[in-house]
Amino acid sequence: MDAAALVPCTMQVNGDARTCAITPATTLLEALRYTLGLTGSKQGCDKGDCGACTVLVDGVPTLSCLTLALACDGRAVTTVEGLADKGVPHPLQDAFDRTGGAQCGFCTPGMLMSAYALLQREAAPTRDEISHALSGNLCRCTGYTKILDAVELAAAELRERAK
Amino acid sequence: MLTLPAFAWSRPQSVEDALAVLAAHPGECLIVAGGTDAVPNLKHRLHEPRRLVHLGGIGELRGIRAGDAGLEVGALVTLTELASHPHVREHFPGVVTAAAHVASPQIRNMGTVGGNLCLDTRCTYYNQTFFWREALGFCLKKDGTRCHVVPQGKRCVAAHSSDVAPVWIALGAEVEIASRDADGAVSRRSIPVEAFFVGDGVHNNVLAPGELVTRVLVPGAAYGLRTSYRKLRPRAAIDFPMLSVAVAVRGDAARIEELRVVVSALGAKPRTLGGLDAIVAGRAHDAALAEAVGAVAHKQCHPLSNVPYDTDWRHDMVPVFVKRALADALGVPA
Ligand SMILES: Cc1cc2nc3c(=O)[nH]c(=O)nc-3n(C[C@H](O)[C@H](O)[C@H](O)COP(=O)(O)OP(=O)(O)OC[C@H]3O[C@@H](n4cnc5c(N)ncnc54)[C@H](O)[C@@H]3O)c2cc1C
Ligand code: SF4
Ligand code: FES
Ligand code: FES
Image 1 (tube, chains in turn red, yellow):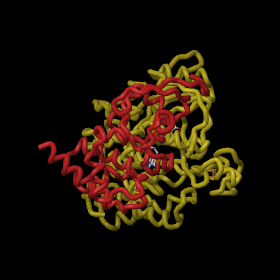
Image 2 (cartoon, chains in turn red, purple; image 1 turned 90 degrees about the vertical axis):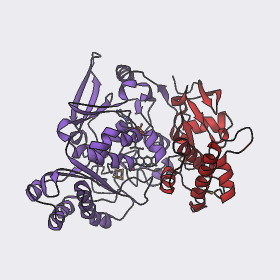
Image 3 (spheres, chains in turn purple, yellow; image 1 turned 180 degrees about the vertical axis):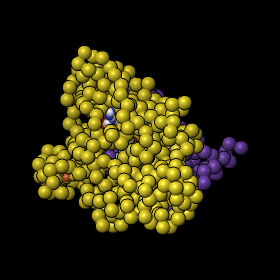
Image 4 (cartoon, helix red, strand yellow; image 1 turned 30 degrees about the horizontal axis):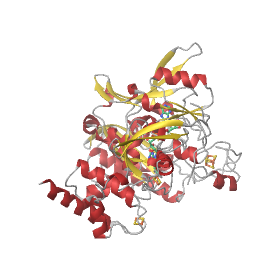
């Protein structure tokens, strides 16, 4: 495949098959934001330091700024836009709102995706497990405490619902 | 926003196909596995390949297998998989600690064992945008003629920064390399990980263009070694090492038979400390022994200003971290 050619890349994005035409030099983050119009994932450092671009690829937290979009052809991608259910916020989103876990909000989509993947595999994470799971997501505003509170609150809410 | 330069794309499905692509485009390719090192470096224009060869489709390079000959770790095994593998956790805790100390959870989900071994060296004056590097007149690793760390030197001394490589070396692990000759015949050879690295920061390993790393092999003889890893870094997550120490010991705290200590993040290749067996063989671990090992490390290791943290302080930290890693390996308080 040569450098300038636009090639099709099909991904299952938040449950829908989406195809975009991109050059090989396109990151997953760029494909999501600028080709598919999903601007929830944030372009922070664009080099792996901040986690604002975190999405799930086949369920695994991944930095979309360092992922080549073509490497995701045929794979499932979940972004922050995929968390709410028909306009009803996910308990994590609700909890971030209630605890003040989002201030400027720039880190929030990435935080939510790392936290979402944690709660998928661990219904009752300890505070340490939460901070470890979020250790690749930087926040310049909150001091993290309210974010950890939010994840604990959401975990409790989800456990309650599962009863 | 950091854009990627234009490149063509290949996604081979086998080692043979990958080697054929590399041979068909000599000098034009960059191999990409997880991309966590290659992609930022492309964005910084540190690599300017015409073509990317993405290894993600090569199933043969996945998987961890433990057999009579030892442990085989495929080049595409992620650091998350390595650090959570039950057999690795049982026998090689030093490998687990090192892999779990790389960067962040997302990066460990993406980063591979092969990419970690082949990680480009790092330097304050190199891991910067094109604009930044241009303002300084570049340096001899890329686009320039002068080294800003050792201005009178002729060699790049950028820091080897892989967390796992020092532990592989302490364990006596080997790396398997696949290559293709002019007739298209594919062959594989294994060499000690220690011999994989060379002391040239521009290209700090023996891989020739057109070659691939396929596996890491931990020999049967490494079972029973007690391993540990200590890393000095500014924050407890995300940061590269500014000093790293891997230890492998045979014996126990009451009687050490053999000791290997590998120190890295100083120069272009990890340094295996010399002369330790004369100090430790047959002796018990105590404060005097730890002090003696620390003193050897202090004497043999020389941090440089290739990473942005105080050189004298890092030098002072060498014996501290060596003593702590030794105590970790032996399971005694540091
Ligand atoms: C913010 C940040 C922090 C980081 N911190 C650390 C850290 O603390 N410690 C650490 O060790 N690493 C760190 N890394 C680097 C990196 O994430 C890991 O070392 C990772 O394991 C690299 O693997 P990869 O598959 O992503 O490599 P890639 O980026 O795909 O490749 C790295 C290099 O190896 C070559 N390569 C890859 N696979 C092969 C192969 N099979 N055969 C031949 N050549 C190959 C590529 O051509 C490239 O030059 C960090 C990265 C980032 C972005
Ligand atoms: S050690 Fe010198 S030559 Fe090498 S990257 Fe740093 S400044 Fe450049
Ligand atoms: S934007 Fe991807 S890690 Fe910062
Ligand atoms: S809320 Fe502003 S960066 Fe986290």
